[in-house]
Image 1 (cartoon, rainbow over the protein chains, first blue to last red):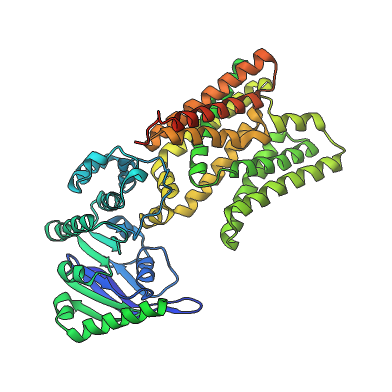
Image 2 (tube, rainbow over the protein chains, first blue to last red):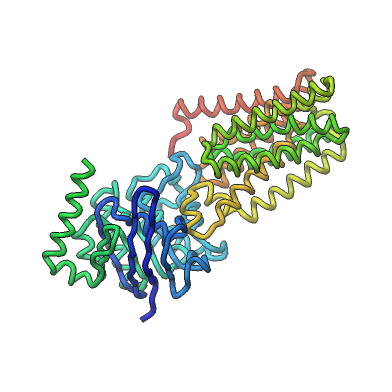
Length: 240
Length: 262
C-alpha cells in the first residue's frame, strides 16, 4: 500500500521542555487517522513540523515518499484546516475570495462554485467572511483546503467553538471525503466518541506515541481508553 | 497643470493599491516611517550634489528592508520598529542639514510636496514606476493577498511568505519616495491609509474594496489639485482634507444605517 505519510524518530526539544520524543508512525493512502492526546501532548508541534511551520526537528518526515526537508512540493498536495482560523474581522474578502486563495492556478476557477455547492455554502459566496457564523466560517476554510483537490487533508481540532449542528454536518462531510473521494485524512480531536465513529486508525500521543493502530483495537481495549482518559484528566487538573 | 494631474492620478492609484496591503497588515504607519527616512536621503543628496530623489530612493528602501530584517531577527514589535525608522531618518536629515549650513527652500518642497512643479521627466518616472508596481501586484496577487490574510496558512500553502513580506516593504519604499512630490514627507501616510479605511467600510470583496479606494484616492487628488490651483493654497493639505472629508462622509452614512453591514 502507498504511504501518504511516514514519520521516523521525530523529536522536538524546546529550551525548557521536550515536546516530542522519538515519535514514529505511518499513514497509508485512504486512511482516516484520528490523533488524540491531552492538552500539551505535542499535537500542535507535530502538525507544525508536518506543515513546514516548524523546521528545527530531529528525525525525518516524508509525504508521498518525499522527505519534506528536500522538497516543499507536497504542500501543493495537502489541504490544512486550522483549529480556529485567525483573521481580521473587517478584512474585506468574500467567501469566494477566501476559497480562491486555496487555488494553485486561476484556470481552475470553476472549482470554486463546485466546492461551495458541495459544502452547502453556495448561497454565501458573495458575503464577507467576517459576517458569517463560526460553523459557516469553518466550512469556508474546509472549502479553501479542498478547492485544489488535495490527496491529504490535515485538520487541527477543527470544531472548537462551533455549534452542535455544524459539528454533525462537518463530520458527515469528512466521512464522505474519505469514503467516496478517497482523500486521506489526519485529524486531531479531543472528542473520543467522534474519533471512534469516524476514524479507522488512532494515534494516541502524549509527547511519545503510546498507541498507534486500528481504531477498533484502541476502543475495544478498556485499559488503553482508561489510561488515555486518566492522562487527560491529570493534564486537566494540572492546568487548574 | 496637466503634468500635475497626470502624475497625481498615477500616484493616487499607486498609493491606494500598495496602501491597502499595508493597512490590512496593520502597517499603516510604515509609509510614514519610510517617508521620514527619505528625509534623511534627501538631505544626503542635497549635501552630495546628487538629485535628492535618487538618494531618497536608495536610503528609504535600504533602511526599510534593514529595519524589517532587524525586526524579525530581534523580535521587535511592528510599532516600535516603525518608531526607530521614523526618528532615525529625521535625525540623519537634521544632522546633515546642520553640517551643510542649511538649504531651507529645497527641504520645504520635500516636506510639503511640489506637485505643480513636476517636470516631464518626473512624470515619465512616476508613470513607469506605477505601471511596474501594478504589474507586480497583479502577477503576485494571490501570494500578496493570502500572506496578508493569514501568514501561517499562506506558508502551509507553499507561499514564500518572508520573500513576499520583503516585496511589500520594497514596493512601499518605491511608492513613498515617488509620492513625495505630490504631498510631501509629512502627509504621505494619509494617501496610504485614508482612502483605504473608507473603502474597507464599503467594499465586500477585495477587488471591490480596491476599486473603491482607488476611486476615492483619484477624486481627492484631482479635486485637491484643482481647488488648490483655483484658490492658490497648498495642494498637499487640500488633497488630504478632501480625503478626510470622504472618510467622514462614509462614517456618517454608516452610522445612520444607510450602509447596511450586509
